[in-house]
Image 1 (tube, rainbow, N blue to C red):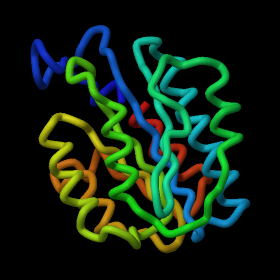
Image 2 (image 1 turned 60 degrees about the vertical axis):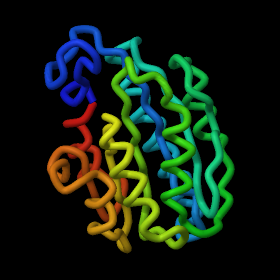
Image 3 (image 1 turned 180 degrees about the vertical axis):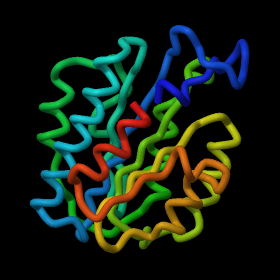
Length: 193
């Protein structure tokens, strides 16, 4: 995220010296994720959020959970030590998977175009509702300067779907996948924090 953080108003394409960032984490809470997998996903997300915030206090974060619908689990705000506990306490609705709902909810939270904006979606699979709408929304939001980072974890990942979310031109820097939450995904993600 440090590498991807650009000056959104002064010098597009140039890293900002003290980049103001908004980061939304979208956590897949659908039925295809087991209870054990949900707990691992939450630990992974809280660790990733902690890594981002230990480097820079100019970052605000929000958390969205999604299954058939999306809901704000933590509104956009500055990092506090309570974030880890909040993420760990999020319920697991276990319904269908709706990436479009997650995108809409997350992007409504990032309403300051003077900040670099990042949407990090952590999902295990394929969207099962509003098929195609997720890709349309992702294109629209990328055109507005929002960077989408897709993290796919599990055996049933739709890599093509994740590629469409991040955009073909961004696949190498914005898309990560692994069969589990082990060292492979952790080392890949070291490049975005």
